Each structure stands twice: as C-alpha cells, then as structure tokens.
Amino acid sequence: MDLIQKEKLENKNKHYVIPLINTVIYPNIQTKILVDYATGKYLLEEIKKTSEIYPIGLTVQEQLNSSDISKSSLYTTGNLLEIISIHKTDEGYLLSIKAKSRVHIDSITQNDLGFFAEISERRDIVDIYDSDQ
Image 1: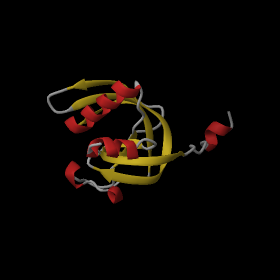
Image 2: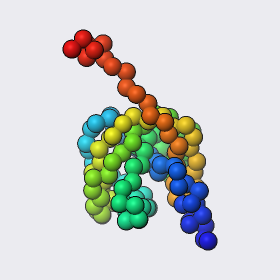
Image 3: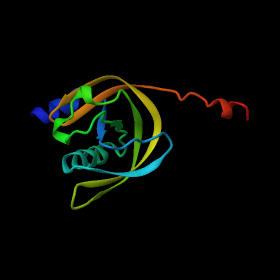
Image 4: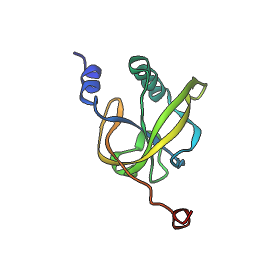
C-alpha cells in the first residue's frame, strides 16, 4: 500500500477541508469558489469513487498564502459543502457549491493530501425577530 492510499484510508471518516482565503460562506448559500489544481484533482477523484463528497469550507483567520496555512490559522466553525459542479480553468478548478449546514470542527489533521476534519453539527441560533412569526 503506498503512502497516498494509506492516508486516504486513515481519512475515511473525515471530511476534506477547503481553506477559504478572504471568503466567508453562510449556510444555504450557493456560490462559486476557485481552488488550486491539487484540491480540484483530489475532489474529482473522490467524486468518481463515491459520486458524492461533502468537504468542509473553513475560512482562514488571517491574510496568508495557501502554502502558509496551518491548523491554527483555520476557524473552528465552517460549512458542510455540496459540490454541484467542477470546471477546470487556467487558474485551478472552479467549484459551484452550496453550503448545506454549519459545522463545528472537533478535530483536524493535516497530511500530504491536505486538511481533514471530524465534525459535529452546529445549529444556528434563531433570530429573535424570526421566532415571533
């Protein structure tokens, strides 16, 4: 078993993390994000195997280059993302996504494939004005 297969097996019950630089995504929002070639290629491979993949979108806390992102630079609340489509571009891969729900990161690990997180659902607090209706 090579290193990549071993890492994929170890990450079986974890969600792939997409670090979001200068981007905040809210639940139930559909939008497009640009990811690098490595991320796009990994997501495409996983979709081919399972037909569905739900990565986690986590905003990076500070202005960093993608190579400088660490576990401590990621917020611990993010969104479970549904990938609607993936298109290769000159700059990477353009993902059309829908944020399904807000999640809390219980633990996060990093390996050669990227970041992987174990999550729990984080319920939204009902707005006081919405509860009166």
